[in-house]
Length: 190
Image 1 (cartoon, rainbow, N blue to C red):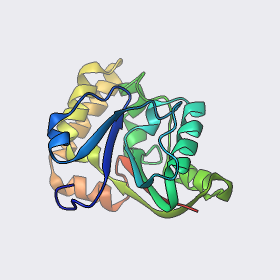
Image 2: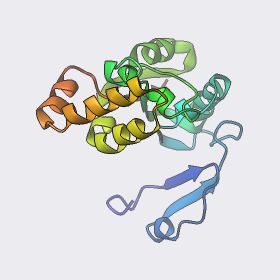
Image 3: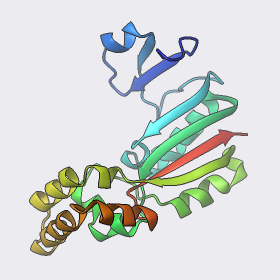
Image 4: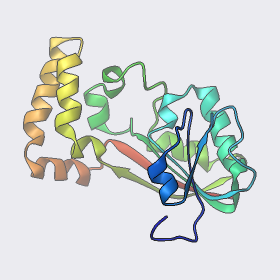
């Protein structure tokens, strides 16, 4: 907002609190249940959802996608991220079990591309990419998993990954092999 004062920026969450720091720079804050309440009616050029869609049920995901579509102006963009279940790294350490019951849905780039490739959803896919939040903060993620994993085998897997990922070359190799932890998808409203 500070770099682009002409932009109108809205921050929303289920229980958005008054955010004085955001208000100081002209960001509006709204409490909103984006699953059941309308986000807007062709009001936005861009809607983002970072690490959100995996936390709702499938019917809520469908409703959220529709609410986002309705909120966007024609040609507007929906940018979101979610853990990438297509990634061997995510699957090998049972990411969803490690963070249960917070992750209700499993997504991968292939499934999301098919889902949003259906033009009846009202979006065109602009770009699909992978990222490595998990690798950027591997000590926190795998350290947590090592301490909470229900079996000694899973604890050992976490320990092994912690040791391997200390080497930045190993982290770079995983990214080169498209073994990041998140899928990033940019859609344009038709």
